[in-house]
Amino acid sequence: MLVFKLNAQKNLLPDTLGYCTGDTIKIEIKEKLDKNASIEWTTPYKIIYNTKKIIANTNVGKYYVKVTTGKQIIFDSTYIKMYPKPKRYLIDTIICKSKYLILDAKNNGARYFWNTGEVNQKIKVENNGKYWVRINNGGCGIIDSVNVKFINSNQMFQNPEQTFCLSELNKVLSIKPAANTKILWNTGNTTPTINIYKEGIYWVQSENKQCGKQIDSVNVKFKACDCEMIIPNSFTPNEDNKNDYFFPVLQCDYSFFNLTITDRYGNVVYFTNSSSGKWDGRYKGNLCAEDNYIYTIESIEKTNDKKQTRSGYVSLFR
Image 1 (tube, helix red, strand yellow):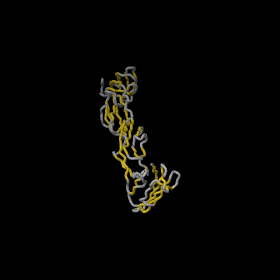
Image 2 (cartoon, one colour):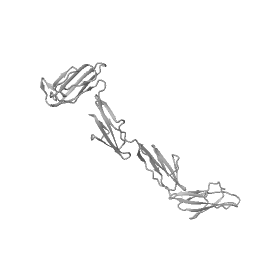
Image 3 (cartoon, helix red, strand yellow):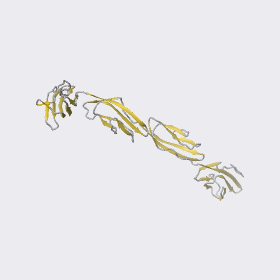
Image 4 (cartoon, one colour):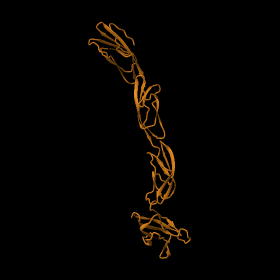
């Protein structure tokens, strides 16, 4: 800064001013001047008179001002610098929660101030939120921001084994996948939830862009819970002393019990009100045809008078 003084010393302008490429910058005398003062600006492109502020467009270089008040003359100057405007590079991101994200403001050589308090070009984030950074390149600055969302890795099975009560009507396995996740079970199903009809090992594969591919499995078992019945789905009444009778295995006592078996046409082929009754696969002494038959079991538990009706299919094979 070059200052020539007569009678008084005043700093009218800062030493340097910076602005972004393509922007304009205002140069202003903020000191209070005498109303009769004469002002003369000398700029790289022209001379301007009697204004306390001027606009610098795309002209860098030295700007001079001379203020005359009576016999007092004050000279001052400032240097205008032009800086490339920083660019915005941050992009809203969704990422798997098991990972972390590096945010890079880029614009090498600039100065940075993140809303996390960090001042590096790159920061590591591990939580949801909106992150912003103030990027300053000399006298030229911008603010860039990004929304970061961490999603749970696909929630698979909590335990390696899952047990269902035999009486449960809807035995299901479920996972909780993130949005836009592809699902494939070893049963061929592609939905997050499947129905279970038999014991065994079930596995599921999930795949999405954020968390990649994951596979998990579970061993499904059935058990008889309180006052449940184990009801077979087939029997072979061929008099080989192996699985010759159809009957439910009872877990408790009943004050009322009816077992009715009908054929596909609704004809009753067997009935008993004894909890120890067993169907030998015959109707009026004659062996019934190989087919699927419908059983209905009506019962009242002796301990709590709970009424329940169970029904299903049993296959007769010879």
